[in-house]
Image (tube, rainbow, N blue to C red):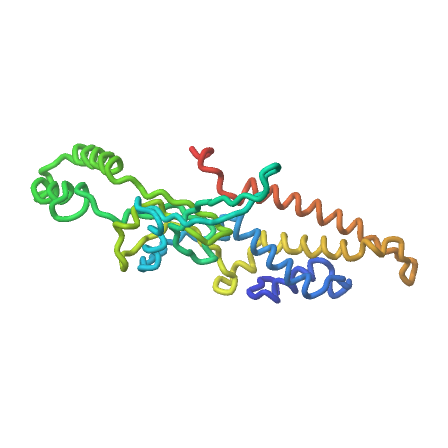
Length: 280
């Protein structure tokens, strides 16, 4: 099928690109399954079409709050880990190491977090006694009462004040941990409050079948299977087949390596988002 929409259709497509059924592709089914997973993982982690920007809502629980402020009076969660080290001349010594426990668990599909939206109110923009509310109440009762330029400059000034008084929450995240650390005053939080997380989530092909038909995924997986095919045949180098044909797995392997190198360069130049320091 020219437009694969399932995992098996993608595999069949790649095999046809390599010569099947005219040629026998010497790759085991389990090897192919592993290569499909590798291709999808590479696509999710590097290609801008492999992720979607999401706003996930999370409800704080009492367990989160207790863990966040554990064993620390300042509100930042710290737990103690005991370790033993051997010091020459002094024997075995026990040390206490401290690590943060002020985190919440995030789904495995989340591969990047931009920020957590402010979940506390301020006198600048929150509540009916805020400056923003008073401006609209007293100055914006008719459209021509305030110049738009003056209003825009006032809003910018108020936002600068708001930024200084209620700064964004500091977060730390590593996609291999599935933990988002929040450096906040956990003692001031209440169970039932919600966090809104600005994050990137990997597209699951089971839910979004068009991933299987992505032009990069098809080319990349074909080259991965080709490399595995060549690797499987390398040990048969010099073996003569009926008719005098000689198997050359090394050449197949090297061709696939060159194709993968070229595809990774294309990924870096055309499909990856540039680092923020290089934008603008």
